Image (cartoon, rainbow, N blue to C red):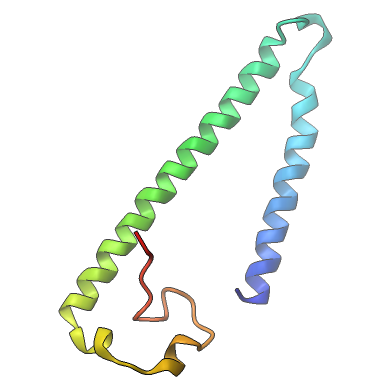
Length: 103
């Protein structure tokens, strides 16, 4: 993984934790005790959003797998190349023609 990508991922995670720590306590109000319906609703919205995001990412990866398989089937010389060095170059999965996500 490249250094800028690590920095971006770390920044995104920090921003997510920051946002959650700022918004989370605001949803649990003392006057809603003991049910805390606002907090429960906020937690369920966050949970459902996470599940939806995971599902959409799964569909996106399946799309990438299918499109890469079609590309390799159309150009079999790419899949047959046996150059070990090309697999170790610092390339993303989009730049490396032989890279395929595992099912």
